[in-house]
Image (cartoon, rainbow, N blue to C red):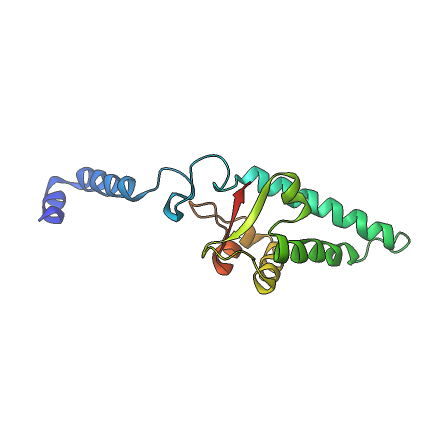
Length: 155
């Protein structure tokens, strides 16, 4: 009966009903659907911190690669260093050096303690592709987070 009534009332009323229903189902803050707090430790990490951590990790990888390959620097050694800096710490500790510096970490949505090697590796590969890492849903989870069942949180 509601659909017929909104159709008979005209398109503006129907559009208002759709907007009201969308606003009722939309969470108030990022991570609310996952049971995360709005602010403070354990809340979804903001995009600015995630980007800052990524930039710190890239610079660190470039410095490490330059340290070992100074004459041949422009090759792909910095990508290898970045992959190691990204996969190994996230696998065991849940954070890259950049994440640790900005007080954010990767956690599994299912509540398990360690992220694990395959999740860390998939996150690294998809982050290297950039596009999946910069497309977020309302909870602040990008494609690589959703695929691996992880989320980046504040410490």
